[in-house]
Each structure stands twice: as C-alpha cells, then as structure tokens.
Length: 163
Image (cartoon, rainbow, N blue to C red; front, side):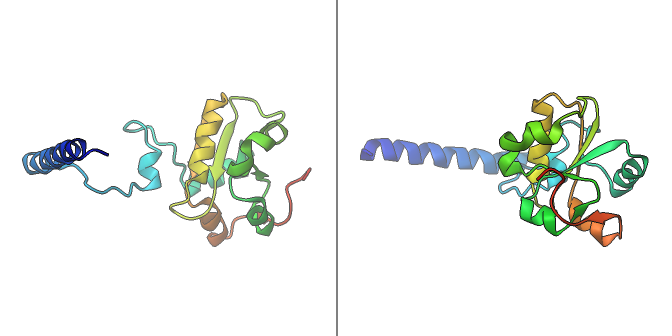
C-alpha cells in the first residue's frame, strides 16, 4: 500500500476513534467499545419480542406434546443424550438433513431449538434458518440441554430414529 494512502487511512481511523470517544462522553448510556452480546440479547429483535423460551414454558410445551424439539448439536452429542423425543438437526448439516427431519411438520407448528451452553449459538442459527424456511413459530431454549438435564426432565439416549 502506498504511504500517502496508508497515512490517509490511519488519519480517518483516528478521527473515527475520536468521534466514538466524544460520543461516549456526551451520551449518558455510551456506545459499547467492545461487545460480548449475550445470546438472549441476540434473540430479541425488538423490545418485547424475544425468541427465548423459558425452561418452564419448554416443560409445559413438552408435557402437552404441542411442540417439536430440535437439537442443533452434532450427532455424537445428540446420541450421548438429548431431550426425550427431540429430533436431531445438526446446524452443520441442516441442508443435508432438513427435508428428512422436518417431513410432516406443518409450518405453523411450535418449533423449539436448543444446544448446550449459555454462549452456544447453534440453536439461534437453527431458529433463524427455520424462519427462513417458512416456520412461523420458532423459539430457542438457551442452554437447553444442560438446563433440561440438570432439572431431571425426561431425556433420551441414542441415535435419532431413522438415522
């Protein structure tokens, strides 16, 4: 890169950094300089419209049989343990397995995606994919596997039916 262009780019970056610092000084709430957004914040597109499902809501939905649980983790993890009756739809292979796993599930069905860990974003990514594919009622159980297991709720072990 030419030295004059590099100097101009550095000058522009310095001005932008100064603008951010000035904005933080003026604004009461400030602008985040570094962000590690929690998954819950990523799943709230507009105030009051969270895609996050509480464990109590998930348990109620499970008990009533009114939903389809989708495990977004790798097949090996699913086989070691999963929410009883959940279908395995690993995020990394969603294009390959989508039609088979979602066969017969209407677009208006309640779909609950989950993975494991409070920072695991596989369930969020799978939920967004479900919206993209026309499913209207998709929710995410954040840290779903650990929450479910730690609360002694029904689990299954082994491969997904039809695997």
